[in-house]
Amino acid sequence: MIRTVESQPASAPVLAAYSYCETVTGQQARNFAYGIRLLPAPERRAMSALYAFSRRVDDIGDGALPDDVKVTRLEDTRALLSRIRDGAVDEDDTDPVAVALAHAATRFPIPLGGLDELIDGVRMDVRGETYETWDDLKVYCRCVAGAIGRLSLGVFGTEHGARGAERAPEYADTLGLALQLTNILRDVREDAEGGRTYLPADDLAKFGCSAGFDGPTPPEGADFAGLVHFEVRRARALFAEGYRLLPLLDRRSGACVAAMAGIYRRLLDRIEREPEAVLRGRVSLPGREKAYVAVRGLSGLDTRHVNRRAVRGRA
Image (cartoon, rainbow, N blue to C red; front, side, top):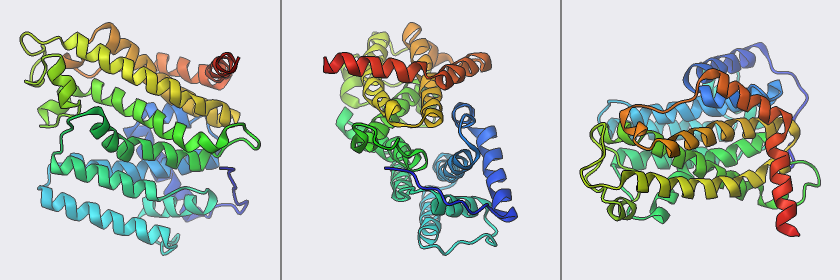
C-alpha cells in the first residue's frame, strides 16, 4: 500500500477541526500520543482524527446509558461514517471530528470500513458477549484493535519496493491484537468491576480463575500467575509477528509504531514480573520511560532488531 498525499493545503476550518482532534488525543490517549508525535504534521493530524472518531465510539460503549440508547448512538455514528465515506461532509459541518476525518480520507487511502468493524466490536461489548476460546476472542480483538492497525496503515503506507509489503495489513492487524491483549491483561480488574470478562473461558478454567476478579487478590486456589504468564506468552508471540511491519514502513512511521508498541511491550514486562499488580490498580509507565521508548523508536533500534531477526530467519 503506497501512500499518496495531495498537496493542497488544509483550510482554516479543517485545521481547526484537526486541532480539536489533537487535543482530544493528547488528553485521552497518552500512550498513543507519544507515538504519533513522531510523525510529520499531515500524518499526525490524520491519526488524531482516526483516534477522535474511535474514542467517540468507545465512549458510547463505556458510558452509563441504557443499552438500547447505546445501540442507537452507535448506529447514528455508523450513519455519520457513511456520510464521510460518501463525501457528504465538508468543512462547514459543525462536527469537528467528522470534518477532520473526512479531510484525512481525501489525503490518505484510509480503509474506513475498519471503523465499521470497531462499531461492530463495541456492539459486542454492549451485548455483554464473553469468549469461550482464544479464537472467539480474536474476532473481537480484530474488530476493536486489528482494524485500527489496518486503518493506521492507510496513513503510514509502505515503503516503495519494500519486500513483503503485501503482508503489511496482516502484520498491522496482528500488532493490533498484541496491543489489545495487553490492554485486557492490564484492565482485568477494572473490566470485572464493570461486569465484563474478556479472557477466554477455557483459559480461566485451566488456571482455576473462572470465579472472576472482583478484588485485589486472585480467587482462592487459583493459579493467577500461571494464567497471566500464559497470556503474556501469547501476546509476545503476537508482538513478534506484528513487528515484521516495522521494516516495511518509512523511518518516521516505523518510529511511531515502534514507540506505541514499545510502550505496551514494557507494560507487558511489568505485568509478567508482578501479575497480581493488575488486580490492585492500573499498571502504567512513567512519562520519562515513555519518552525513552519514543527516542528508541525514532533511532530505529527496534526496526534494525527486527531486520536482523528476519535475516537470521532466512539464513
